[in-house]
Amino acid sequence: MTEQEMIKGCIQKDASCQRMLFNTYAGKMMTVCLRYACDHAEAEDILQEAFIRVFTYIAQYKNEGSFEGWIRRIVVTTALKVINKRKIRFNELNDVVEGSAHTESYALTNLSEEELLKMINALPDGYRLVFNLNAIEGYSHEEIAKMLNIQPGTSRSQLVKARRMLQDQIKLFQKIAV
Image (cartoon, rainbow, N blue to C red; front, side):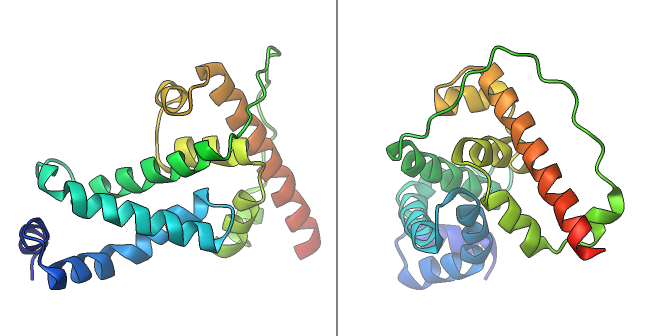
């Protein structure tokens, strides 16, 4: 079954098409949920809520851009709504943040994807959220500011701090691995 046939079936509320669509995209979207959630249970809740929204609004998909990208946007938006309920606090910074130190490239090659994900998930909530939205999802600081109701400068400073913290963790990993 093609993606278009699956979408058409979901619009018609065909349970087999909905199951197929879920099975096709749930794994990738669970990875997105895990980046934003506190734990696996919360990620599952976000995924479930997101797919409820996907099935509710699938008729609004306009076949512009990738369907997976459309689903990902819904997942991220759903994750942000859950996170907003947690009342994450962002530290406003007035100081100028200088460029970050260079991390040896071979340290990165020794990291598995799972280890890097653990490091990202260990970041404080505000750092992790901005890092995920900017570095992974590709949102601009202005877009992040609107989504999180913060200043663009706060987004920038949270990203710099997140990168520094990750670099420190990678350097520590490098020392342990050597």
